[in-house]
Length: 226
Length: 226
DNA sequence: TAGATTGTTAATCGATTAACAATC
DNA sequence: TAGATTGTTAATCGATTAACAATC
Image 1 (cartoon, helix red, strand yellow):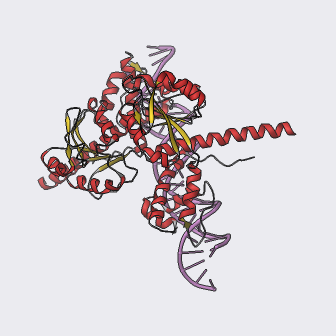
Image 2 (cartoon, protein in one colour):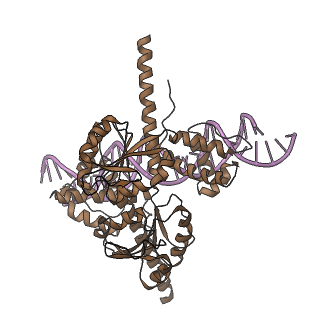
Image 3 (cartoon, rainbow over the protein chains, first blue to last red):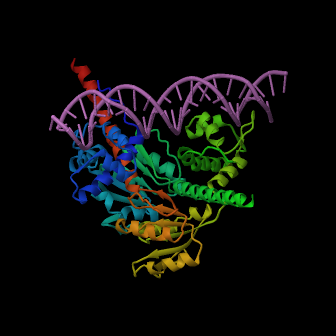
């Protein structure tokens, strides 16, 4: 029946950006915006903005543009930000702690309800009113609580095993911080972060720019020498 | 002169993945690999692998495939992992501390040489032998030391200002952890992380899957009721 | 030599951009 | 009504995949 074409991941990955820019506009008390204006702000084409938004519905009005507040709400809805997901953090090392302490997730409806680690020195300590529990209690916890998302910040070697375990227990999504591409047999959605990949790409870009400027110099020099 | 076409970002973003898989193969003492085998492991087409690698050179050999070690080295080189970049962390909150404590960056040639924060309670404390300095000393530090990369983990509101400052001081790359798209006038390369965007995408995917399975149920039910 | 597998060209697919009729 | 701007179709561009001659 519903033969709507599936929205491409490229579009999805732009949604949080739209959300951020609309949120900014809202804060600046701007009530309406045209695709052209938004295009100038975001640095993408107006055509793409209209194309993107129309994957989900006709949110605009000819001759007027888009109402900032209602578009903001629409995109929140599409992203599921009104859904009140529950999350747990597995691995309370430095990265796990940073995630636990990051307040913005709660604001967006991601409620942290548990933190787990194997390290007895960490177990019992509290982060933001949540006590770190031992990994041994993880299985029972998931069975007794509705847990939507597990944030994985365990060491590389343990990632696969932990991921498989929680996936088997019926968690819906995995947010993976380990530099490893998770492939899970269970019916679970995965989003990889791969910080080190990102840093390597930065390194590449720097390298590239350096080479370019060297080449520029060479060209200049050879001109002079002629 | 050099009319080679610029390699697309899509290809660049796959390089760290190749690097990881080759690193794994090396550890497993596998000396050669065909694009077909690698394809099976990585879940991308053999064609794409060959196409990607050929952007940088003919690293393989007909009838044989690729030598794992030499390909590994080639990709390290392309990514600039033998370059010994120096880095500083600006913002020593939880995320900054997590970054400082993450050992793998050093291994890849990213050497942390400074950490900065405005918080007097943090200034003076040490992370991995590096004392946290006050932000006021940042400018002098960059002038007196070659700093390639600044990792920005400051609060949202301060990101733009800090980014502009360090860019003006001649830093080559910015690794931005704030949920804000940096646009810098200076000649600096930027890589954004945007963790919250990633989490929102995960939320979307979960939402989507949920809708699908509900639809499935509806279809089943309507069949029964017929 | 025969088999395997690359490098590379051509075909396909998908995503972005341009154009414009519809309409507020 | 005239001007603005959308929604949407068509054109273009780029990225992925298929195919195969070259060659180890």
